[in-house]
Image 1: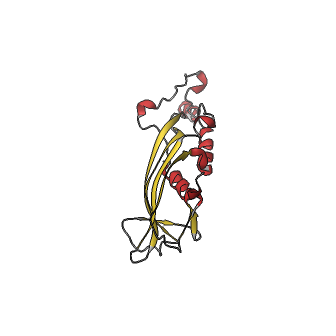
Image 2 (image 1 turned 120 degrees about the vertical axis):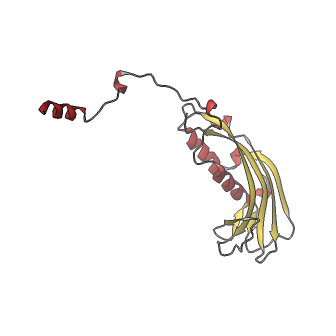
Image 3 (image 1 turned 120 degrees about the horizontal axis):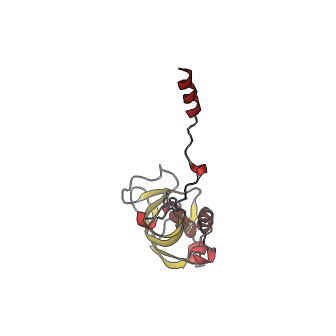
Length: 184
């Protein structure tokens, strides 16, 4: 793992010179994300072995710098791209999902510390620092849709179950209705 990914971005220390992060690493570097995908695959009709997807590439191109506005702060901008194998919630098949995350965030300790810079989205950090790798992983995790499905419905194949006698619809009040009609 690159040593630069273990570096901390501290809220109380401004960065003197812009810091560029440009790397292409394996998905296996991100523990929370791989755990999430592993759990997601448990619901699939046919799961994939982790060695089939864990070495997929995560491309990161970020710049970390300080801006001097009304309230000086550290900001992160750039792009994160990854190819994730997720389970479609409609058909329960695993499919390839391209994730492209544009990043333009201002790191702050709370909403009050962020003083209305419209160019950046406020990103609250618990404590006074965050590891770069943790920030990247969190950005990837929140970019996964809540309801994952194929982009095109034609790709989503829902298996049809043959109808059996046990599948016939039952009407729970049919017997009561028959009794009422017989009483008349």
